[in-house]
Amino acid sequence: MGARRAAHGRDPDDLSAGQVAAMLDDLKRTLLHRYGTADERRVESALRTRGRLVIPVRFHALSGGRRGRVPARAVRRQISTLNAAYAGRWGGADTGVRFRLAGFDVTDNARWFHHPQRYENRIKTRLRRGGPGTLNVFTAAVGQDVLGFSTFPQWYGEKPRLDGVVVDYRSLPDGAYRRFDRGYTAVHEIGHWLGLFHTFENGCASPGDAVADTPYEAEPAAGCPYARDTCPQRGADPVHNFMNYGWDACMREFTAGQGRRIRAAWAAYRSPRRRADLAGRDRSTSVDHGTGGGVAARSVGGAR
Ligand SMILES: [Zn+2]
Image 1 (cartoon, rainbow, N blue to C red):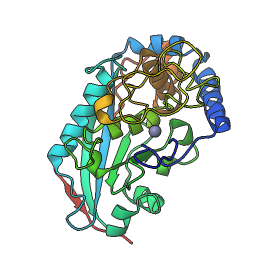
Image 2 (image 1 turned 180 degrees about the vertical axis):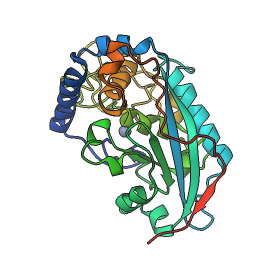
Image 3 (image 1 turned 120 degrees about the horizontal axis):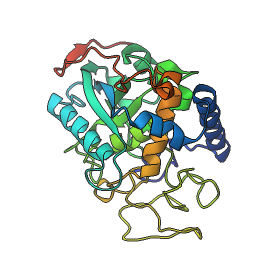
């Protein structure tokens, strides 16, 4: 979530400094409780030996008549875009995260399609599938000011049925959303789903986004600034980071520290294997609650 802006903020809501602090604290306590350490490097070095994290994706398109009927090839391209971005193919670090399409359905409901925030509860209750390790992505007409919204892994325990990511259907690769048509809105929102804050979180105030290798930044990047340094701390603003607010053409990277944060948050909240990971009893990090296959659109009748 993030600052609501006059135009093209990625998300609708602000997290307060207090909320961010509480979520970071919760992550530390959860890691300590489950793994005996809150040190993300220790947690991730133990998990890393097991290869990539492959996340099953349940893709749900909402439509209002003909609008919003996302074709299967756009969904496949979105998955490819996610895989390229999280692999560091355009720059930055390989986060170790990959995505696999595990299901795609289309639900025709004009009210849900046009007001996904108002009907978030009903939409997700009806359509979402799987447990904490399944990524549910919904597309709808999110709006003019906002491109998408997401839950954080810290929220899963209390609100498992609301877990997931909603993005504007025009933000998919080759979509109609000018400047935001490469599928990076989903990359950004899924970053939140995986536990990342904005690079400009907390502005220049400590702890910023609490990731060591994303320099402090006073405010979101808009458009595509050539170079910027808005805080006294070391390092230029991470204007090309996926967790910023620049145009899609401006975004290209995650950092190694963000990858570590993602894996730590996964270990804390989304992995079904907890102490077993550090104990080395289980070789697999592929978490799959899906049934696999099914890329063809399946129509799920409208609801209230
Ligand atoms: Zn955001």
